[in-house]
Amino acid sequence: MPPPPPLDAVPVVATGYEDDRLLVDALRRGEEEAFAWLVRRHHEALLRYARVFVRDRAVAEEVVQETWLGVIRGIGAFEARSSVKTWVFHILANRARTRGERESRSVPFSALVARELEDDGAVVDADRFLPADAPRWAGHWAVAPQPWNAPEARMLAAETRAVIDAAIAGLPPVQREVITLRDVVGMDAEEVCRLMSLTDGNQRVLLHRARSRVRAALDAHLTGEGA
Amino acid sequence: MNDEGTRFGWLTCSEIVELITDYIEGDLPGPERERFEEHISSCAPCRQYLSQMRTTVEAAGRLTEEEVPEPTMDALLEAFRDWNRP
Image 1 (cartoon, rainbow over the protein chains, first blue to last red):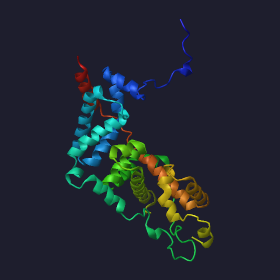
Image 2: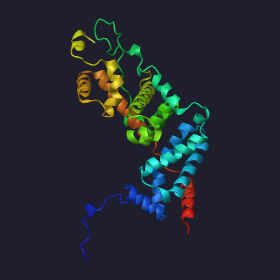
Image 3: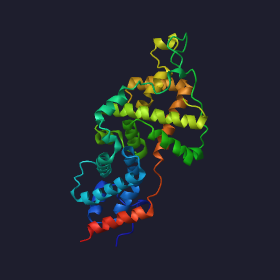
Image 4: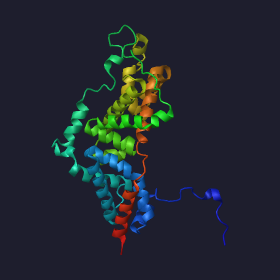
């Protein structure tokens, strides 16, 4: 009998489900552990993504449930042209769009994107900087950003999370979707561009505006004023 | 920006705040990245702003740390079991 492998050679979290091929095989074999792992990993993120399209929490929950049923039924035919994660979020996007108020407003997505890109670009109020005709230091901070009174515990507090949530909820719809996918769900830029049919450049501009606004909301919360 | 700054093509703070996402994303081309870093290294308010943008991204990433409610998980596992039942 061969000797057992040294302990440090055994991976600590040895589910193997991070590997899409192993995950898909396990799901197709009907392994509950694999499905539970996938649900734990994405459920809340899916719920947040659903709420980009449908504001009502109960409807969003239904959409997520339907998404999981879609995963269960579709895994047999999954062709691995994208990651499992992107596929799952794609299923949700399709379902949520048909239920969502955003789509029923009958403004095509491309028009929403164009409108959000057209917006005046400055993400920090111009009067925070010295004017272009200032004798010296034009364009430099007139009112510098204040340090945040934000020890780790305060950043994690429910109150701070609520500020971030509200700031994201208040964003224009496409920016809201981009920042939710990039920063809340944790997708990379390429996945988001594919899922939303955005160019890399547009994705970045929209992400920039979204992050800047959320920073400003946090700033107002953590310093008592806004940048 | 002062005259020296303009002559050497330094970035202003108002330009820095607009480039910050490109910088964080690693999408600034080499020479612009150098100008960005040059500015940041000598400008405390912009360093502050950059660090706050990073904190914002991290904080957004920690919004999804709640657990799946047990009844929800049970119902989903039930559906998974049903589908796979021979």
